[in-house]
Image 1: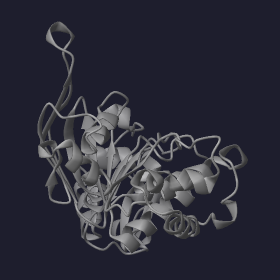
Image 2: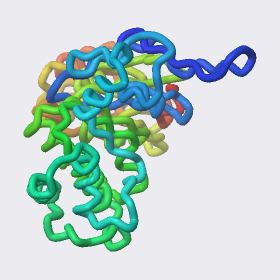
Image 3: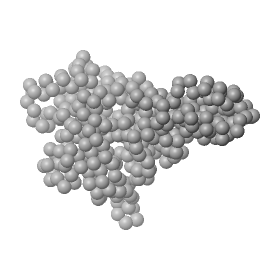
Image 4: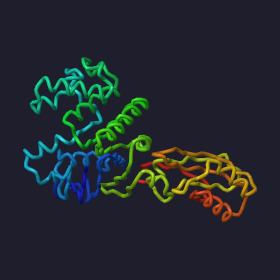
Length: 337
């Protein structure tokens, strides 16, 4: 697991002093993927570097697997880092090494015997679905395949923690989906704690158990993904499922934004709503999906002129949070950052 307490990182001195991380608190349990999102310059990459102590925090503590990293000697830190695997934005592979020799690098540095190394590398390549690419060089592989090789290398020393810093950035949707599915399998099979840093909100929906939004070095909102998406007051929840403008509603209709909450919502709620109100109800747009067995999302509906209190009460009775809108602006992470 990863336990971050009051983590602060300052670069420079005096007038050139720059506060990048300011007293962060964050906890990632084993078997959990925790996504950290935020605009460029929010401090996401610095956070990952501090967790592995590639950058030493100015103050605060980083505890990984029970070890307070900043209190370890250099020798102890080298040992502790073996339990931390890192997946980089660029795959970081050496172009003159084959896939198998890239994966073997951490084992070579550790002094593992060639026989044991070959066995471990074969297991890892098979684990990421690239056993048949062992002799290929990076330029012979697709972007998604190179990233899988990078993941295999990160797993070489049997880590309990994985740091993923924009690992899906620049990949096409199919490759992104394959990496996401692989990370979820690894979390489940190896009981990993995964810190997943990204700016891709769609990917967060696919992979994360919990999410935190970092803004100017502060965590301004965090929580379980399901809870954020079910909370109509959550800026982060709205950013994860952005709204679209709707121009096709009748001027005589009222426009409502509804959010699925914790109470089960009947699949035919639109029909029930129209029947209860005795008027037309139009679905203008929706983003609704099933995550971990729970239905989450939101919809925009137009309701022919009816008393707003009646509409709100009817929607609430169906398990939906409702808010009267007139024109729903599109939301993005930059809007709420």
